[in-house]
Length: 107
Length: 114
Image 1: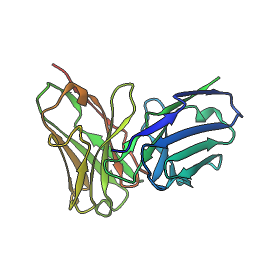
Image 2: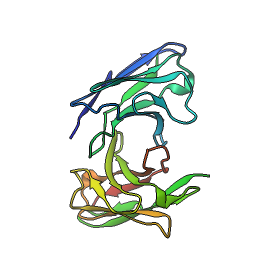
Image 3: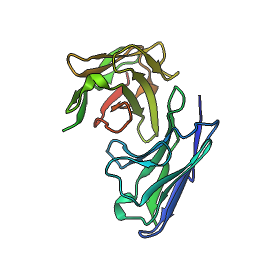
């Protein structure tokens, strides 16, 4: 099973700042990595597919990069609605696995 | 609109069984593989199982293999998760999601407790 490790566990930033979230895989997942946003009481929302492709309707301030074992989700300028938990997920192998999440909180 | 609606959750004793359903609408259900994903209270996401669009193949997380069975009825646009030998650690919100995880249901809560 591929293990995904996200860092940091918690990120404290202010609106308007840039956020950089990391996800490291225990073995190569090529570009088969996705990012999700989850707010309390809601289902996850797909942000990024295949490491760098924004899902339908996702604002341009969200971008993804990386391949192999190291991936990054960047939010260029934080909006108030961006404060949430973010998960990465690998779709390279079964079982698909998720990272443990990064909580993005308001500083 | 495109929608997934889960049902069937509830409180169940350890060792008992429960079947979850996920009703799909607004898209051609029979063209998409489907997943179950769960989230224990206050915890992260755990992928549970997948089934191919035609039911021809499936995979499971090790934590549920041999106890849970994913199935589908394309004539009813419905996905199922049959859960047996339930344990306290199966307590979670269970979500169904479309193949690319682009569409999710709202989730149904399963609590395993005596």
